[in-house]
Length: 151
Image: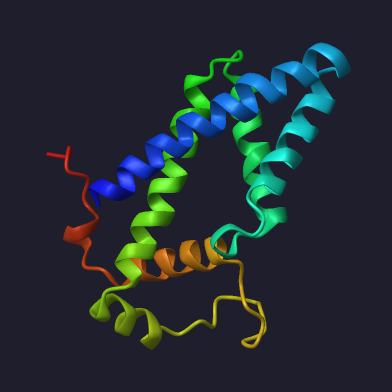
């Protein structure tokens, strides 16, 4: 888990400094805000093709989320870094968690009727992970869902 956090922090900082700090700002200064938003997100998506099965389109969408968090925060680079780190950590942690036998058994036994995707259509890895996480949350006992900070 510590390695997942380290990878998430390093990737979040490096990628956001590169794609929002440099690419977004360079495009914004020469071509405007809309071009910066779209082109920096496209560059982000293309940079992730085909890393660990990542979908370029899906990564482009996450690039848009990170770029919008940058814009809406008043161009505070810390905000997309935090959003990126949290996203990466959740994906890496759930991927690691999914490799354990008990977790995998429970996931495989779940009914997938709530998904409207045909059974033979594979989901992008990130969507699959999020869908499985939601399904897992629905079968966990309520005590395991409490925040560590709640009283």
